[in-house]
Amino acid sequence: MKIKRFAILLTMMTAITTAIAFAPVANACTGITLHAKDGSIVRGRTGEFGTPLNIRLIVIPKGIAMDGGAINGAKPKSWTTKYSMVGVNAHGKSAALDGLNDAGLSVAAFYFPDYAEYPEVSAADDGNVVSPLYFVNYLLTHCATVDEVRKAAGHIKVAGAKLKDWGGIVPPFHWIATDSSGGSIVIEPVGGKLVIHENPLGVITNSPTFDWHMTNLRNFIYLNPLNVPPVKLDKIEFKQLGQGTGLGGMPGDFTPPSRFVRAAVFSQSLFPVATATEAMLQAFHILNQFDIPQGASVGMVDDKREADITQATVVADLKNLKYYVTNYYSRRIKMVDLNRLAPHGDKIIQIDLPRKETIDDLTPTK
Image (cartoon, rainbow, N blue to C red; front, side):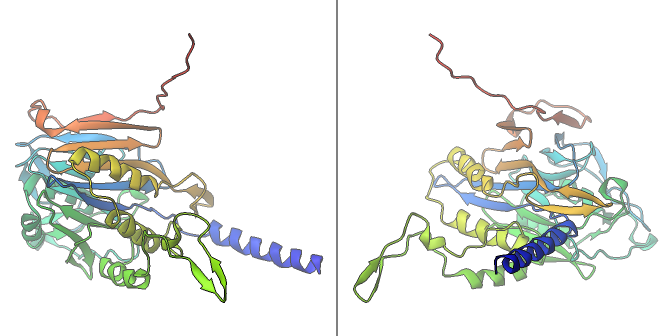
């Protein structure tokens, strides 16, 4: 009997290992939005990827010329930046994947594999196309509110060229836009068109589509941060063994549907906070719950095991125009204040993030 059980266990372990080995890399980004009593809106997100992105802070000033990036079949849109912005980029590019502008608008790209469908474009679309990689730049340097984002998205096409830095594909993104009034939308390229969803919870993850995630939340309406009461069976009373029984059954894996549920629960159950600074700190605490240890989410890329890790976590204070970031190598919070930016003319600034953790030694030696 013991041999039979061991054989079954070995078979199960082999199946699990095989599933892990051939699973796609998760690209498991998670976004939340918090509201403070003083009217502040704080939006935060994690940024996960299996291959190193060499994430930097990027500052783009107002009044400079930009374009929509590499496009197949058409010339990209060109514009002059109306607002300055700060964000994070990848691979040293001038394209932000997440950011905040000096009007209090925040926009972020999230991976959207298997569902992103961009239109075919031609010379007839010259000057009216922005690549997925530069869509955050376009919105943040062009718009001040979610309403303006909605209008801008309706007057352009998002399509692009395959990029070597992204594995020879057109990056499959969808986007969240949030302004200082608390308005929030999700923009998704589906069927060759940009579909816009209202986002009342301010939560986003990855595939499938946003409306699917919102419907899926109905499967978890039993979740409650309050502990369940004791139960009597016959004459015996059974009490909970510890805190957290109200969230029993909440999905805990790193898949997008599970993270969406957890992000909604954690952000909506947060005790009210008074200020933007408190909300910012709470956002980092919540997003810590989505931090992926190296080796916990693994896929195969070119016959090599590749692990998703949380390469950066950012929080944007849309009222006070402050942008905060931690990265894989340092959990210490870094910040850029858009109110105090020195003018840089036509210069885009890139700022390296720490590559080593700073540890405070508090050992009493006297």
